Image 1 (cartoon, helix red, strand yellow):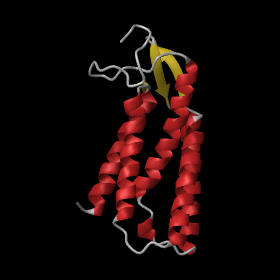
Image 2: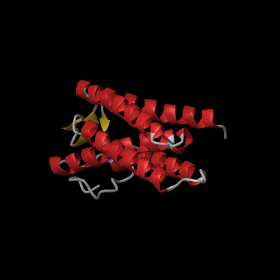
Image 3: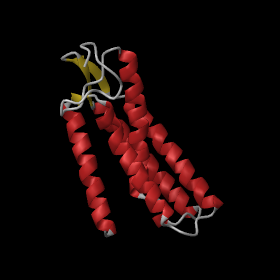
Amino acid sequence: MGNWVHVALIGVVVVVVVVRRLRGEPLNARDLFAPPVVLTALGLWALSQRHGLGAGDCGWIGAGAALGVALGALRGATIRVYERGGVLWQRYTGRTFLVAVVSLAAMAGFALLAERGGLAADARPVQLSIGVGFLGEALVVGYRGLAFGAPFAPERRGAKSPLGPDRFGR
């Protein structure tokens, strides 16, 4: 599969996730964690295909991943978590988008520094950058959901929540 196909697929996943969260959606563990885990795994796979990475390259990649998780966590702190219909819901806010813009600028600046520091451009997979950002967001939103006290929403197809039964015994 060509690189442009990967970028297009990633773009579609990101747009779907953002649109759903902008409208507000039930908060369940699968929808919260599946996109970042899949994107991060794809990014790590892309890195595994890149040969010749040295210790310095790995340092830049690790620092970029840590920055991505931190910025995602900051974004996660701006997401509205609330109860609706007896289960948790989440919704992006205006502050979420403001933090997203600042995060994009920070990550672009970091990428420029990494490139000037000698990291090859193809050693920074887009999937990994987006995945770790969404992972940081998911960790904070998941924690806030647990602290809220309401049950996570069950999956849409009638499946039970992977975090255990809700207050109705489902």
